[in-house]
Image (cartoon, rainbow, N blue to C red):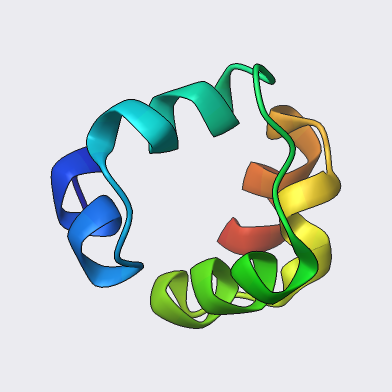
Length: 59
């Protein structure tokens, strides 16, 4: 899924989504739930370092 597709599905701009990814802004808990739902993952995966989360998702 592209950044544009994710932004559209969670109803935010691509600029704002990029700022969330880069830690410029914090994300609200309700948005974490929406993002996890759209990505079809458990919310805790969003808080793991990338290498660990990828290993867990591939399992």
